[in-house]
Image (cartoon, rainbow, N blue to C red):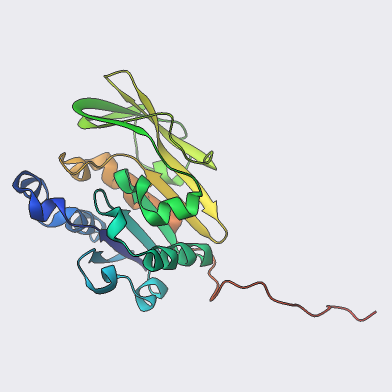
Amino acid sequence: MIRVTVWNEYWHEKSEEKIAKVYPKGIHGAIADFLGKNEDITVRTATLDDENCGITDELLENTDVMIWWGHLKHGDVPDEIAIKVKEAVLRGMGIIFLHSAHHSKPFKLLMGTTCNLGWRESDDKERLWILDHNHPIMKGIEGRYFELEAEETYTEPFGIPDPDKLLLIGWYNGGEVFRSGCCYHRENGKIFYFQPGHESYPTFYNENVQKIITNAVRWACPDYRIDKLECPWVARIEEK
């Protein structure tokens, strides 16, 4: 069983009526609903307003894959919480960063770069081109591309390290392109950045988006985890 924690800052849905209509259970609730339909996945959620942002050592130890969505409240996540998440990934926990989580503290710590990009909210159509149908994250996605009727436009340059594997390129009818599906390994942990998911749009109800996130959970599930990060002294294996 894959143990997933969906983390969401959960601010827009509580403070903006139009967003609450799109995601009445919160973005975390919408994601938890479709993931929870899979027999091999169990889901819990956590939000910014929970004690310690809902993130404890116990939760991280019992999470195989974390999904992170944040936007305007990145700075409200304490540094020590962000470091805990980063270190959990280095020990082996998988993590999926969605949309504006590109500027979250854990993502920036793991990337080591600004993670800056260009953006525009203009209801542009997005066409997501699939670069590798053989990758497990793309399982079940048919055709050369799929489209979202409206999404927030993200534009290059995107200040991230070159991905280990680039799976998706997004094209917008305003003319821009963007690296929309990026895979990384950081020590023992796997990372997937997936660009769609602005809070104003029903993106997380899209069948292809749900398939990709579900596949990414299975891909990011740890093959190996260690208990702690250390740089130990080791004895000789053989005597002189």
